[in-house]
Image 1: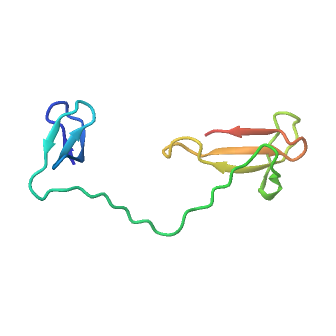
Image 2: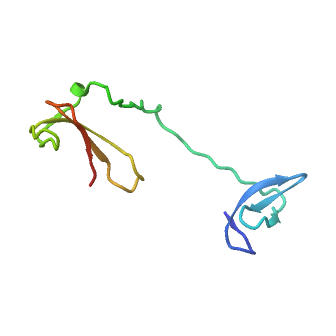
Length: 110
C-alpha cells in the first residue's frame, strides 16, 4: 500500500506507458515504482456460491417457519417469517413477515 505524498489518499498500482507506478485517484499524482516492484491482489475462495432466493410479493410463504406475532392489519396472532440482510454487514438482519390469515406483509428492524 502506498499513500500519496501530496494529498495523503491511497494510491493504486498502474502502468503508464513503459513506466509502472502508483497513481492517486484524488489529485492525479504519479509516483514511479522501484525496479521490479509490482502489486498483486489475491483472494482464496472456498466452496461454491450460495444460492440467492428472491421473494416476490405473490410468492407462497408456506415454505417458511411460523411465528406467534400479531398482524398489524387484522390482529391474527401467527405469521410466516424469514430474515434477509438488507443493510450494511455491520447492521442486523431485517425480518419479513406474512400473516397466515390475511397475507399482509410487513418487516421489522432491530
